[in-house]
Image (cartoon, rainbow, N blue to C red):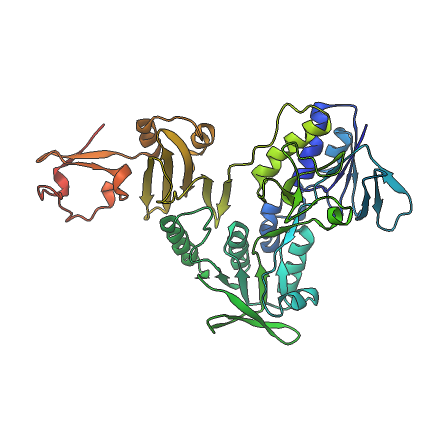
Length: 448
């Protein structure tokens, strides 16, 4: 059996790896437009600052593909799929490529919001860039050097946007982050932690502008600034847009494969066409698109099993989770992080906020089940959280894990529980008084 995979991104590469794990005989061909074997996009900003080299980014060298018996075809753009004849056509080549099973790992493209002049200035290389590939990173690095850029604006305060801003700042450019939402990382952080992150970013010399919709990219032939919808203007030499992604669906759509926002798949990641599957950023399942690495990894296992008719596992969706470094600080965000007041059920939050050390740890429980977590600045609890998500947990164990303690007033017996108060006992002002008997802070004893 011959399996063809279009796309050598995280979902395509790990699908190929899983196929080979399940079956040593199946023929596997991978086609990609990229010039490079599989690399991690997370570290692309560090290529711009020079912290990483191109070779540092390559995760699997070509020898890895050969050892796995994976036929990697670089610089190959596919411009046609024929599900009836089970063929694909490579641009510039006359011979068709036949397959028995086809896997579409088409990935996604950077989203460019409806900002006046944005698309035109990007296409004409006038100083507006998106960052999705090694070539994008190298183009940005060259532009900064050749134009002697001094100021940069990053539109988008998401995970990649903030790390991009950090590396651009490290490249000695005065850097500003412009974020549409009223707080940073609204899907990963609550208000309190987002405020802590903003302060930490600004302490590193990066300006952060929130609740800011960009109306226009300004300049004639080369970028000079941006204009916000509230009328404010920010001067800049380069604009970098990191404002989400759009699933790549054109190739599937032209082949009459059912699409909506993404390529529509069922629980086995089968598309509307027989023997054609899809995986990763390009898919839509139950009206949802993920666009996160954990989803790509989970889906790659499901689609590999499905292709080999080993349908012992189906896709149930992916719990949103991220573990990354943001401006050099560890961040883990998983599951429900900010339960709505309208939701039914007994929600409980255990929280440790240490602003002095830029550490924020929050665990969200429903009943006795762990439903979500934010771990910022300190990730000692990450392994426990990942292993116990959606399981019953011991609250006393969680308090010990987060190093949250209770203190008892020796005069009246009032208990100060750090897990519920939100302020660590040590961070209370020296003149703080017991709310009950007005005793001093010194009158409290830490419980074992």
